[in-house]
Length: 351
Image (cartoon, rainbow, N blue to C red):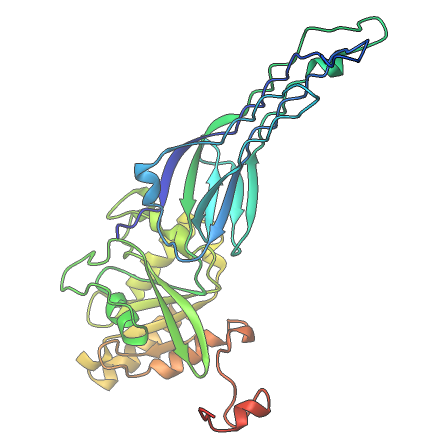
């Protein structure tokens, strides 16, 4: 499945149905009079956040969405049926932006959340509603109010508890493969990761979602490399894991480069808590690990966790630190020996 996090679509709500011009024609009614009903309301355009989607690729091939128009009124004072609402299902974390790509019209962050973006037009009045003391047999009716239409941008910001940042080749793909079931591409060249990856980490009877984005380089805010377009996917994270390659460039310089790009992007990323991890310690000796750890602390890191994404060394301490920034509600298992009810305490039996 191709990953797409931005799409432009056209939406139009339904037009209201026209009113009816009709008169009663019963044989024994001396003064029949008008009985034309009103038209039905047009359908609304509704956006709904659903699970099971993590890309906007469907909107590349279907870009026009139009709700059904209302049906016309009829005689015997019958109101026309309303048009069906059009529900557009989008991934969790999708923002709906105006055509200027700056004004946020809707932000869908909860499963099942619905937003009525465009309301359908009201139905036109039938000739019965035009009847008055001076106009006993009106022959006019309303045509129905038109619906609204506009172009909007959809922008997906993945919902994750923790975000993984670092320079290219810092070992982020190996790291996420080690602690989740994700099968991210790993290669000995820059920008192996070209789109965000999501994985679920299970640690100490708790779980959280980890997002890996393509590596940042100096000048990413100005478009260097892949740029900073994917940083939007970690805006909602509670904590950032900054992965630094001990076997690559100078660790303190790597720390400064990424921090500068996060600050240049803004959106509150520079204020998020950091967990700094010194990766690939299996390739160097312990003395060099201690030296670089001291250097990173002098450069501004509160604490440094030496780890190896390839062997899994040091992962427990790092994940323990990440859990400190997450709510306790992420617990997925009951403590050992605790049961919910009496049925859980008995062994299963078919009879």
